[in-house]
Amino acid sequence: MKRLAAGVVLALPVLAHAAVTPAAPAPAVSAAGSLFQVFVGLVAVLLLIAATAWVAKRFGVTRPGAPGVLQVIGSASVGARERVVVVEVGESWLVMGVAPGRVNALATLPRGEAPPPSAPALNASFAAGLQALLEKSRLGDKRRGK
Image (cartoon, rainbow, N blue to C red; front, side):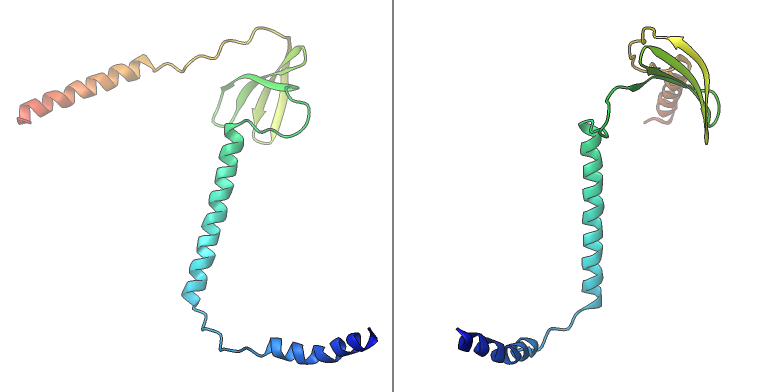
């Protein structure tokens, strides 16, 4: 057994030299090929991140913790970057003013009925204006003979 171990130890330098010496010359590496490979890898990673974010949003993945402790009931914009937000916490609603870098408690209300979510309706004046524009466009086409 000692002879076998001594033979392996003595053969190690020869094996190391054979592993370092290449049998055939290595092909030249193209800079454009390497750059393209890095670009494809970067695009693949970005697509993977986007797909993961989409799946998390689609299936409602949330952070671990107590779910439903805080729930936004509604909000309204009152300025360019200011909002009034109603948040449900336990059995009460908090009315808060939210601005960049600042949140102020405006009022505390007893828990009430949340309004049912409704589909946003088109503004009647916008719909009427769009209809008038379409009619005007049709009249212009008829006059030009189209």
